[in-house]
Length: 244
Ligand code: ZN
Image (tube, rainbow, N blue to C red):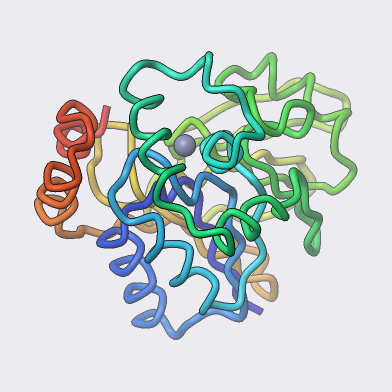
């Protein structure tokens, strides 16, 4: 079976469509595993939710999804993120809010735990250090875990006895699943922050036991124009080009 791992779509339809087209070009997948933050920042909350719902998928809740329906406090959001979130909240139909409201915080699929931030703090924790990766091992029971939230492709590889190393998840550099426990971040579809503005996602091949990261160019200008038309903060639009 093949699964596409999509994190942090952030209402960026051009990026989402480019990724789904790329998946199709590669022969398609059996299911999409979405790691949350479908909405927030970008201009297309309706179309991103609708497109995802037309695709066979499972999804966990991200902090921006929760904030858009009033489940997560935006006190910790920076001013631009808070502005975009209030705009997003005004766009959502009752049906879309209901869909977001029913997203679980954690899902187990196959050998993987799926969550947005981290297994111990699904909504809030940014998994950035080997130390926090190690602490999180006790908070999920599958061998492997997919997380999003930092918008940066990263792999933590941990020995069963503890001790994790971290490396940037390079595109087209297959990650073979073995004995070590792994926490894998596939980067962001809709707002990369690792210096590469191309959309980022991964495909897990459960027969080959391999996870592969792909980067996909998309029409950044189209998303930026749409954000400006909607009156979203300009800094959020320019950020898409810098990917920082
Ligand atoms: Zn995010």
